[in-house]
Structure formats: structure tokens, C-alpha cells
Image (tube, rainbow, N blue to C red; front, side):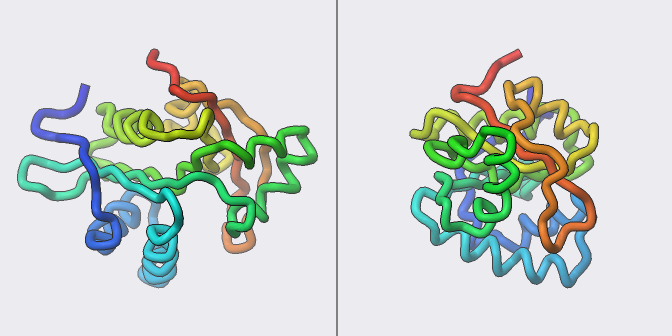
Length: 180
């Protein structure tokens, strides 16, 4: 159940990118330099075929969380990085027919109240693809617990992105997601 006054709805992420990145910076601990890099990435992603976003909005309209994603494309940077890891585990086929959760962030003041669950299920419920994939820091965390509860399983672990200091896990789930 969502916190009182919070609603989930479509988000014009290109128009509200700075507000979304403020949420991400607090939730994920980004520096100003990283925020600048992410701004460019988000704006580029939102021009991709099928890209869409949902937001969690407080009563005053402030953004308290967001998710965005798109149908996977093997030519995108993320896919080229994770492909060898997925292939090594026999899961390369997950790069086809999957909706990628590119980012999901909830302001810490709203975490643990179903906002992330509502965002990810809302965006995947509208996906035409039969499954979803994402990457998350490869550590036990509330986010990974949520993904598992929704039906995501590990497809590859110890995935190293060039700019990341910590390894990631790639997770996949068939759609629709589980509703525990």
C-alpha cells in the first residue's frame, strides 16, 4: 500500500530530468559530476524507441520516485557490456524480447512503503515484451529483495561496468511480475 497522498502516473522524464536526478542522487549517493553524466544519458535514453517512464508523486506534485525503461536493443551500451556475462551463463537469449528497467529510484523518505513495487509493476504491466531484465549492485539489499519477491532471478553475477566501482548482477523475470 502506497503512503497516503502518493500517486503513480506517467512521467515526462525529459522535462523533469533534474528533479528525477535529485531523487536518484539522494537514493543512490551520486556526486554532482555523476548527476551531470546521468542527465545526458537519461535524455538520450528517452529518445529511444519504446522508452517510457512512471513517477511517484506527492500530494504537492513533487517527485518522490521514478522508473524508466525500454525494450532491450542489443546495440545499446548496457547490452554490449552484459552480453558476455549472460552468454557465459547460458542466458544470452534474455537480451531479446525483454523490457529493460533502466533506472528505478525512490527517495529514502518513501522507501519501504511499496513505492518501488508500484513503479516497477506499473511500467512492466504495460510492456509488450514477455519478460524484463535489469541490473542491480551485486549485494544483498532491499532492492534485490524486492526484485526477487517480484520474480526476478539472477542471470549473471559479478558483472563489471567500466565506470562502476562495485560489481552488478543482471536479473530477469517473466511478465507479468509476481504479486506476493
